[in-house]
Length: 292
Image 1 (tube, rainbow, N blue to C red):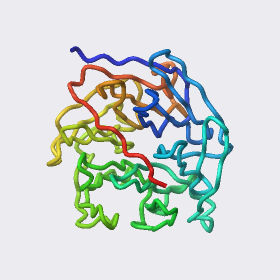
Image 2: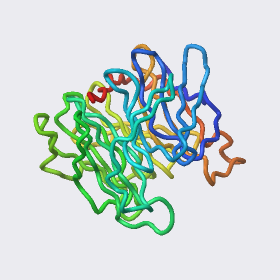
Image 3: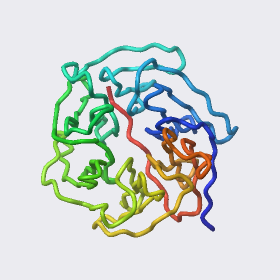
Image 4: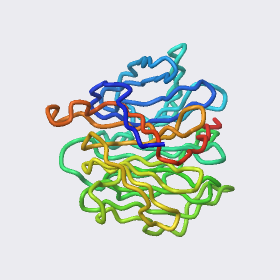
């Protein structure tokens, strides 16, 4: 199958992000972070519906029991799309009003990982990763990060990937992951993006264990093998792709969010849109749900 890229939602999002495929409902959930918008895209009908949360939402995970967990400007929340019910869980950075949550993912035991970053102004290494356990306890992990990003797990859940998007760092790391304790260890550089055009943004993995990375500011998406070798580069019609996620009934469609804020719309009129890429030859894996 030839590679095809289609804009399926021409939304002009400020910062499209957080895409996650819902295999039960057959829809893609995604976000516009600063607008605080949650989106639900149904590829069967082509309909995209939205709800406003009321503050920036960095990432989400679906809950095993229904609804979702959000990592927002004011910390972790439970949220139900159908009823609008929301419940605050924890705000681990209430003492850092300049920060907000950014990227995140769920591990194989149903824990939700998410990281923070300074929101606006001169970049500073104020970001930190946090683990939200299924009993709603929050554990901080690694700090000193400019822009926490790229979190994903290998298909067996034993390797955790994460990155820092800052132009001075632009590195993806891998760490061995203890599933029993939810603890990363043995951190090492997985991929230095100075070898490609784009800096690391959102990431996901495929069934072969390869890591897919949105190359923000480079107009490309990359597939990286488990041993850290660049395997595929896809040019996309926007300069700032932000989060790839496999979806569709066979998990063979690569959805891609993008950033529209500040884009030259004459050169890239669909910046901020949601794209669907087919023909990559790769297949994704189901996303684990939050167990709390």
